[in-house]
Image (tube, rainbow, N blue to C red; front, side, top):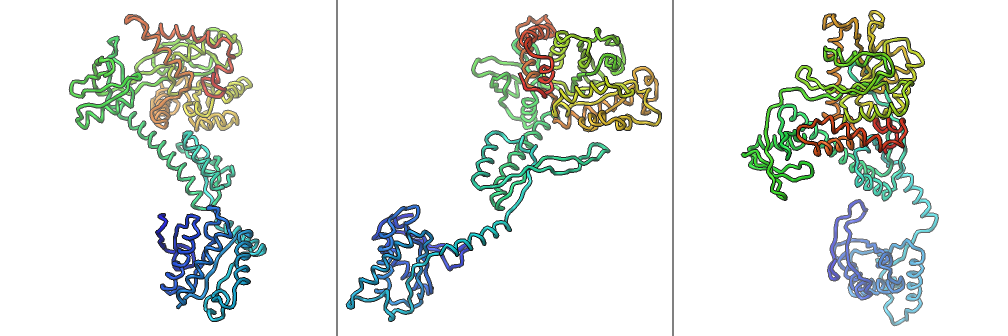
Length: 579
């Protein structure tokens, strides 16, 4: 505020008529003049009392004795030059004891030094309507005020719950802002369990979720939760954007011709940009492909890299076919994985053999009902007969086949009496699979003819605590087939492979939809995909991508030679620390 300026504002929540703002600048002459003017202005306005702070003795750090002398000089000048009409009380409000002592000392000096000839404007009964005093609060009063304030604060404390899982939407910047504000406002935090009703299909069950309870003044708590809510809303908006991009890719697909003359589908994000540009009849739009910024001429359907000058052809076509699905099948040898694949494709793609040494990781890609299905038939990951070296090779082969990640894991179990071996399989699955991996998992039972009459697979599962626990972790997703006896049954009947397989693919579609069109992935799966793409770029046009995968398998086996089988499995499914 400029030195020569004073202004007044409304009182807000204070019990007074107005608040006067002035700048004193630690200047004794300014303090004297402005204290005098403030008193004169207040008397002119008809106010009966004025309250001053101990000017400039706080953050300004002015010597209390100097400040007191300047204030008293200004107040005395106002009372001398103009007899008050309305003013009856002038208060100097002081909290700090040492400042109070300085002001009291100065008042005492002035009282003693007054001679008979001097105007006794501080003590004279002639000016009785005006009382000048210096007030402080005693320790008892301060203690009582503190108690009252604490009680008032307790009554006004505000609580708000924040779901712990929601914090995963926050980036490092938002988390830092939240922690900083909580520390600044002195909010308390308590971790609690909150019960909520979760509905999956026709099933409803109560489950516990962890929440942070923030407690403090309402404005402070809301300030912190506002940061969290904005970050969550932004993340959800991004998810909705990704979902919209995915839905666009189901109808329209843009492709680009790479330097090797091979047409490649553009990413969902680029596909969405081009679809919008085409729809809005824009002349050009910028996209990013393999870390290159390309400017697309929508009329010519050409994309130019301005740094290199290379021009790439584009084409747009309507995507009539259903989207691709990558399926990874897991289970013990003899569980019926190969027979399941043969039933799904309605032809013999995999040899059926129940010996542990015959199971190998094989991948088949085939169209089914206008949909490309990539079916990765894994070895018996949960068998005990294979050596660790053999298992590691098959696991690495499985990773390369399903990279950058599967849309669904099918855990294949038999409908049979629950044995110790079955318990061991379920135990290993829950050991290796992270919560994220289980979001993409379905439990599929084979040998459905062993299912008792009038019994559904859900009812069968509930009879076993361990099985029920596993299916619950998969959000209740389970199906049943019979690879031998259910092939010729009417397709609308429950005990029919055609009915169950149709329901299975409906479930897979729901999983993909729930994850915004995405698939399960991990750092390892993404890294493998990049390695395969790099190897493919080095191959000649007549060499297959399968050769690139074989090269990557051998390289990965060398890279993971010192890694245990347990760590390798956990790295895929997110349970063990990443490599």
